[in-house]
Length: 430
Image (cartoon, rainbow, N blue to C red; front, side, top):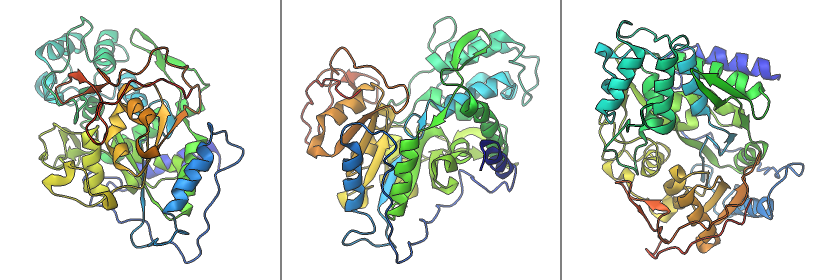
């Protein structure tokens, strides 16, 4: 199938039944049991892997796969992947946000009050957005950011840097282990559209970026050098396939809006109903609101948790493992967790640590790299990014002092499973 035909199919799917991909839909059932014939696929020999990763990953996924003793097709082992920068090169959430702003898709908030878009937005940010975007556009109508550079610039500055153009904090008083307000703002800037409309916009946002040359950039407002290209990693797509042929139940857990990633997940071979991400609540007309579905101890519309660090664990436990209790925020018993997990960022630290086998792409993210290099129980493997890998970090990761953050955002040491401080780690995989 050609790339153009593929996206035509995705676009048609996005314009269909409003019930497809709904964040508040019931928990999907695992994939149907494998037929009696188990045919594990080998990882492709023509794709480059770092060091012994191909052999190690194969050994790991074989250990619990359909050819292993004790495998039960009615209780498949679970494999989890982050999406942005784990399955993909570059950030699909950024692509959607940039598209919404550049194509005048952001709607004027009710009463022209920007604080309604986020419970964590500061007065300074709301005032700056009102000054830049104005109050003449009626609530619920598109803001013409394509012709109002100040409006585009203010939204971009807040999204990219978490500050106003004047350098003032745009958000305050959030839990750093369950929320990242700038990530949440992508979903909140999508308010006013249906699930299907958001999925259509996502396909429109990423299609040109997947066809663009590596290194392509774009200008929105006066912001230059914004990323304008995306890829799906061939190695990761092949790994997904290898897991599926071994009878694993493979899921995506993302801090991007669930609707957005569900619109493109099949590019990596994962069904849309196996995507877990930010779940916006809809109003009576089926339009997305600024509020989120809750998880664990966090109620619907509290908006203090998204699928971010502790929140990713909670959402995995709630949706993948069916725990609808307040205890979903807690780590499950060893025999009730994922077998395999892959990530690239501190955002992924908790759900990856929970898995038996852990695979990390090195983007020099301090917390997760401290855990990965410490390699507790030999259960971590690291890979350079498959496209444009980063150079070696000159300094060691400050694992023993400041690499990890608590819920207040205060920096501190990273600790192993026994609570001991992890020593500083050198960056050796690049």
